[in-house]
Length: 364
Image (tube, rainbow, N blue to C red; front, side):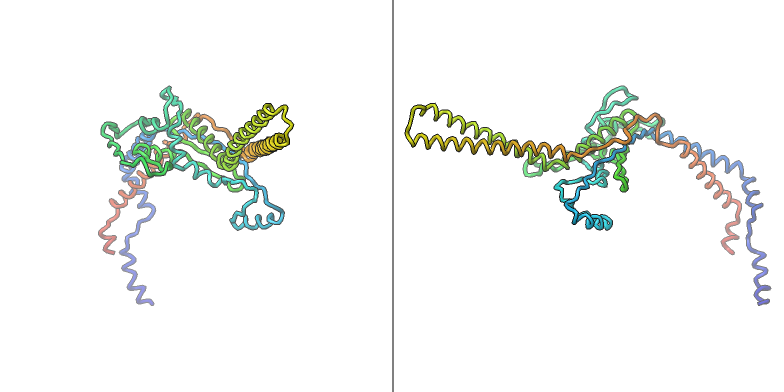
């Protein structure tokens, strides 16, 4: 044991040790270098932050109506247990429900984003109305400092795809290259968050103009409410359309039957034959039958209209959209400070390699 300690003592004396005093001495001797590198990185961070255009954010909070009707007391307890397990048992109300958890996916869908690109917004900085597509794709907002200028004349021309006019589904989406760029850009600017506890939905929109942001979030809110309402009432509206068509047909049938009866009575007013009386009874029966069908369909059509109104969901706006008074991004001070600390780190690494004898350290 003593031999090992005697043998290790020379090695311990030869080990390189850097104490706190030496570290401060190295920093002090290289202070100008550290300061120069740190300031340089901070300046780069400031310049970089100026290459990012200002973003304005607008939020709106909605509380949608959630259908919670149960099909019966027998299923009530089972539905509760299934809900805890994450399983949804049908409520038996016959109403299709778009759950709030699906709303973010709706606002990320291509059909919505295409409609959003077509919507018009007023750009305060340019004092004119523009489509969202023109605003973010054709002539986007430029940052305070633009390092790399984009020459639109050198932009690659769109390659038109040869698509047959027949034999394709009308639901097929054919996007141009610029449309794809706009949709990708807009997908990063529109989002939604859902609170699973209370079902509250928060819609978030970011653009480079505060007025345009508020108008786009208003369009998004209207689209979402109409989409959910249309989904909830789709079956009822189809039923109403069917009843309206049958109602028109039954009204026409009733009018024709009544016209035939009136004509027959006028032609056989002074006839006392039994055959004529039987024919009149037959025509009267056709009139009564047509009227009963017409009356029944009228009642069903009124019920269908009430059903649509009853199944139309209600969206309560808890926090309406507001025009942002201050930009939300970029945080230029944080970017500059981040670059500053990164510059300090780089400078300390340089000082370390310049101070330590790496060859001696690696040999040991």
